[in-house]
Amino acid sequence: MSLLSATLLGTHFANPLLNASGVHCRFNTELDELAASAAGSLVTKSCTVLARDGNPEPRYFATPLGSINSMGLPNAGYQYYLDYAKAYDYAAGKPLLFSVAGLSLEDNLTMLAAIKAAATPAIVELNLSCPNVPGKPQIAYDFAAMDRMLDAVSRDYALPFGVKMPPYFDIAHFDEAAAILNKYPLVAFVTCINSIGNALVIDTETESVVIKPKDGFGGIGGDYVLPTALANVNAFYRRCPAKQIIGCGGVKTGEHVFMHLLAGASLVQVGTALYEEGPGIFTRLNAELTTILQRKGYQSLDEVRGKLRTL
Ligand SMILES: Cc1cc2nc3c(=O)[nH]c(=O)nc-3n(C[C@H](O)[C@H](O)[C@H](O)COP(=O)(O)O)c2cc1C
Image (cartoon, rainbow, N blue to C red; front, top):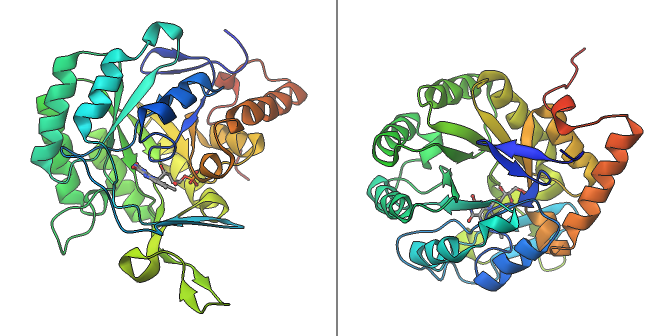
């Protein structure tokens, strides 16, 4: 056991870092670059049954404080990522996570049946920050739909899996979401958070929005979201003691990784900062995290996880 080693679902990870789904993981070449990087694992782009081109460009824009995007789930279709998962070299020691984002319950069941049949060691992260019925909020903001989804997936897939959650902003919503997740023991981990949805970035020179889809509205990541991400990690860590938490949101330095660990994260994903810096970021983050842990005299991540003090 080295200083940075981590576990999820009983699987060993050399370090807690990986990409956030959607960043540097749409194509095999990008996934291979993550596999070759200092990341401890990697997750595939959220997939749908059929390949999608996604929304018109520009659809991602970086600012000094983070990013805004409205990608529209551009992906190569689940079969492409399943082929990758089948050919993947698990023996090299870097676990693979498989992000699934069906446009309906039926689509998710179709994809999960194929993933289950392939029987690879890849770990499913089911993206619940996904479109629902038009006119209804995304699945994770429609608690009845989320309950039905988890019930059906637990029944059909019947293997441990994780869920990728959007941020919540109200204690009553933390309570309700966690109570639903806790009904399903096969929900083994909870990834918090997806982008904060439907924000608007404005360029004052051009007096314009900065991305084309949805009149400029899009999900934000990066510095903008770190405190919200930490709150969601900690809220679910406290409420879901039988589950593990993957932290995601606003991570740009080893100190940010350390904050996510204190809040309760077992693994930590990097989105916007990876987009901006490339896979070399994992070498820097591991080094910065190691420096902090050594300065504080920690011997393992277990000693840090969830140890956030309150006043
Ligand atoms: C370009 C881009 C594409 C994304 N695509 C997905 C996706 O396919 N599935 C998903 O669960 N999250 C997706 N996200 C959200 C990220 O995984 C992450 O939750 C969010 O950006 C917050 O992390 P960050 O602050 O490190 O960027 C995407 C984010 C970006 C910037």
